[in-house]
Structure formats: C-alpha cells, structure tokens
Image 1 (tube, rainbow, N blue to C red):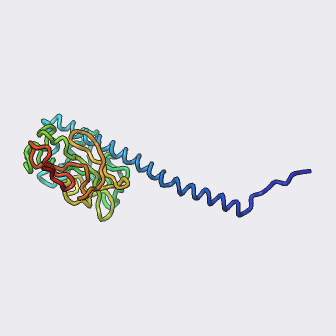
Image 2: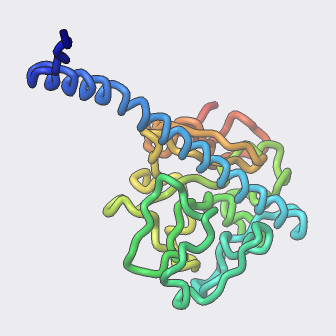
Image 3: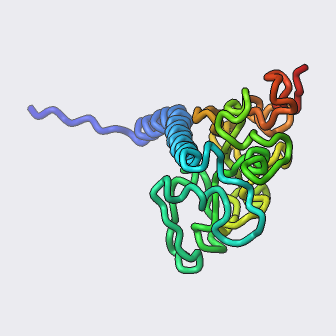
Length: 243
C-alpha cells in the first residue's frame, strides 16, 4: 500500500514566509551596518593615502603643506598640489564629464553630483587654518602650516569629509579655490557625517580618526586650531577653549 505524500497547506506556507520575513527584518539592519562599517574603513584608508600625499609634498617643500591659493584659477588647490604624489594627473575638467576622476577624492558613502563633470566634485576638504599659514600666508601663526613647525600642530585636523547640505551630494569645487575646497571651524552643516552619524578625519601627524558631531557640529574630537602655539591646552575643539 502506497503512502500518500503530505503536502503543505496554504496556511503553513504563509507561516514559513512570515518567519523568513521576520528573520530577514532582524538581520537586515546588521547587514546594512556591516556594509557601512566597511565603507567607513575604506574612507579612512583614502584619507590616510591623501594625508600621505601631503607628507610627500612636504618633503619637497621644506615641510610645508600646500598653501591656500591666492587666486581662483584652476589647478591651484591642495588636491592639485598633491596630485603627482598620489599618482593622479589632471586634465581639463571639461573633457572628463564621463569620468569618475580620482577615486581617492570620493568617499564610498558619498553621492557624486551629475550637473558638472565628476572630477569637479570632492568628498574631502582641507582645514583652512592650516592652508592659510603655509609659506606666504599668515593667519593665526606663521608655522602652523608646516609639519613639525610648532610644538603641537601635528594634532590639528588636516582633512575631513564634506557635502552640500542642500543636496546631500559631494561639493562642487571644479578644482579651483572656493570655500568648498577649504573648511574653517564654521559651517557645521557641511561636515559629512555619512557613516551612521560619524565622519572620518585625518590629522597633520598622518593619523586617521572618526568623530560624532559634538556640541557645535564641527566634530567632538578634531582640534581645528591653536590660539597660542606654546600652550598645548589653548586650542579650539568643539567650541571649547581649555585654559
């Protein structure tokens, strides 16, 4: 006598589907978190490579970082200055509309705009205070834009993540001087906390860290500038000036 095969009823199938859906909803956030963590690590690696480019530039320029441009012409900003040191060579931005340009300049979690050629966009920005104190510029103190130029400037933020607060896209710089290539301790809305509320940044000493917005939105950890170079405790960090 043949045994009849038992078939699943519609209700049983629906229960199995519901269980799978519950399991999927439980594991999906963890998968998203793991994916974003991987992107944050990749982003930190890019900042480390860019910062290495600054150090290689400094080796050829008496320890100074690329200075803040004195005009708004193309190819005058920090990204152009370190291009050869990170093995990237610019061409006319108008001819690169379909190119992603140098991957190092784009955060893996960033959104690149489509209005202008992609190489004109940047996901990272340089600390204005350092650039304006390199070589000919003198803004807060003359040697702050030089590696080892002051007792404490290696602790300063060099690069961090940036975005257009109106669109969420990376900022359009077109590789020339504007307030999108450089960032002072203002305009917190432009700091990109892309990685689940965390932004990466690099320091003058070559180290890379990450930070949450803090009180001011400029980051809880980064030191943006020193008021007095001889006093390590007299600096601007998240709006607080220790005495």
